[in-house]
Length: 356
Ligand SMILES: Nc1ncnc2c1ncn2[C@@H]1O[C@H](COP(=O)(O)OP(=O)(O)O)[C@@H](O)[C@H]1O
Ligand SMILES: [Mg+2]
Image 1 (tube, rainbow, N blue to C red):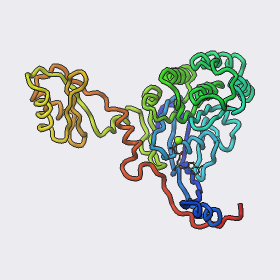
Image 2 (cartoon, helix red, strand yellow):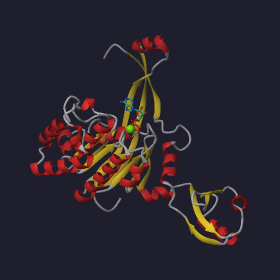
Image 3 (cartoon, rainbow, N blue to C red):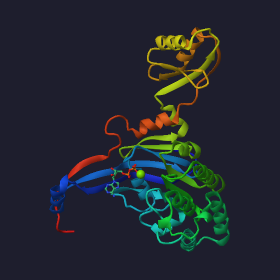
Image 4 (tube, rainbow, N blue to C red):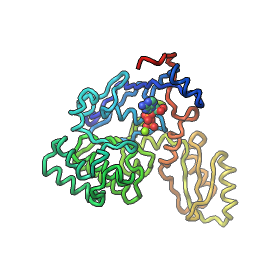
């Protein structure tokens, strides 16, 4: 990819887990204790990509597609089985300390904060660990504290916060040291609409003002649309699409056209005329009383659909909205048909337990 230098490079990144095969029932569990059947789960399967500095990338894929595992390698929490990655010039799992200074991390499922400490105490420790200059710390505390209402969290230990409260603290913590890259894995879990909006404003501001590179996974399509300009789509551990969010929309398999007309016809007759004339398309009336035609791109081009409408109706208004991100993502999340995102699995033979 040309343009700005890549700040993240993944080369044939692979992660396999060795998992004990469970047998059903109590006897099965006992059997598992003694003779273990193992299998290797390849959660990430030779993934290569580059992410340009300053971009905002949505890391998209079905549950189990390997998103979190990839992010754990990129953040140094896990070492790859093979392949490697570089983040801001550092191989994260080799130089965890150096890496920690240039990245910010949020895992919706797993806290990065000190469980028994209050949020202000956690922040003070982060300040020391990252050696954040006083003016930067104050500026960020004020900015992020204000947007996320951190003061309201008081001195309650993190373990007693609600999920939404904890996520606010996690997000602020991830940005406190002006990291070059933030990895946010499901960061808006548990947040209401107002806070989601605050999070979007905040990360966009960091990106615009500090050039922070953002890597985001989210099942919230609103997050992706509001934050990201680029999409990296993985399926069963492999990259299946990388490009702008706009390119991704163009992979939509359905399009739609909405129009108004002045023909003196009952709606049912209009819809019938369309579905008969464009077999495979679906017509309906939207909330505003306009007619909406949805068609598979493998059957019709937008030109054909428009030509048909012009020929058969007296159009007064007509527009073709951008394909729906939600439709496109639903297809991705559902997996392209078959195993729906389950990773490659192969037996790893038998292993006797005993040696730990
Ligand atoms: N620590 C682990 N041990 C064994 N299997 C794991 C572990 N972490 C993840 N997996 C498996 O790897 C696959 C990918 O998981 P994950 O990276 O969490 O996917 P995603 O974040 O895309 O939902 C899943 O099948 C998951 O069960
Ligand atoms: Mg995940």
